[in-house]
Image 1 (cartoon, rainbow, N blue to C red):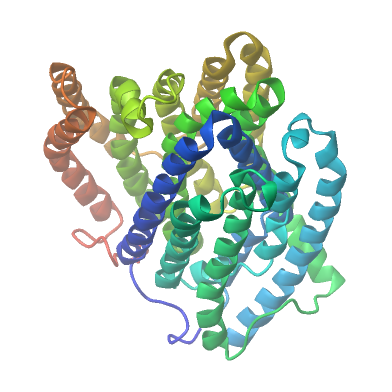
Image 2 (image 1 turned 135 degrees about the vertical axis):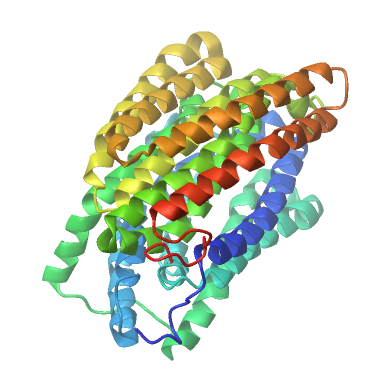
Length: 493
């Protein structure tokens, strides 16, 4: 491939660019979320969050693994004309799948219990699958043009936050409808703006805007065959993301769903963070899996070790400070959310670790091995929610997700066992004293403001954990044949 087209920046550069974009995006999302919860109240906030959960299933069904496949295959293509043709053909398949999803969605929606609360809201959220056809972030990821991916994330979140924080209160009851009806409209506009942010530079790279193009039946069948397991994996994984909120919309009142969402949407940022990480890692690790088994294994352990070093204190800290954090964020208006947050802090930490292991299977073309643990975890989640919610409401849903996420992680640890190195156990042993110090500090400061407790705990954890992380990094880079160079070691560059 022409060096002018594909980025040659290192993984750390790509990850740092995406991180900046994601931090800005999540701060905007968080501000919008907290404002909406306060402005709409538990009832309408619950309806909106059920709508968002429904939208996520519609988007995944309409995409059905096409973007993940596209990233992997674009990262392995060389000639720019071939990439442009591939993308246009891919968009055709996305358009076909979007049309099918809209058709099925319009038939299915009226039969769902929550639809009667606000039919137009759920229909508007369904319309996002049409806008998704022209989402070309996956092209930029495949080419490792992460700057534009980061900018796109920021644009969507900032535009949405602007409408929510600035515009909503001015037009709230316009037309005689509750203010909540504007929220999916704002999201559609933000999504379209984010698309343009990437599509314009993509057009500059290829000399034209890319639209759906002709694709042979044989090639379409090949791609659908490839995405069959990827799409199923993603859809089943979505059950582990938010089947709790969707089922609360069916089994409980919008107020219960609203209180639960106030907790779950905060801690869900862990999952978003792992998705961000894999946006940077997938193109490189996909190629690495084909080039060097030794280097791939070293890279896997290196990044998974870093992930665990971050997730462990978040899980423990969430249990220790969850009630105070939720009270601070929502000014005490969602009292049922604190206990839910404490459970989900551990549950979503386990899910984030499991997602990393599952994406590792995708990177080395073993995506079919991901389906069984996802199905097991999802069936556990659905069964647990149906069983526990009627008697325990939000807490029941949280414990169901805790069990499901734990099962998923356990199975994936077994499947990926042959990839682990002893160095990873050494790192975990080095993390334990830092965790103990963090727990002690947070407990001693129990009477202080929750932000002070979180900040002090994070600082006390970060200082002693730095040394085992550096030692861990040196050993794995040496194993890959490139000590001291994280950016471009042989096979890891």
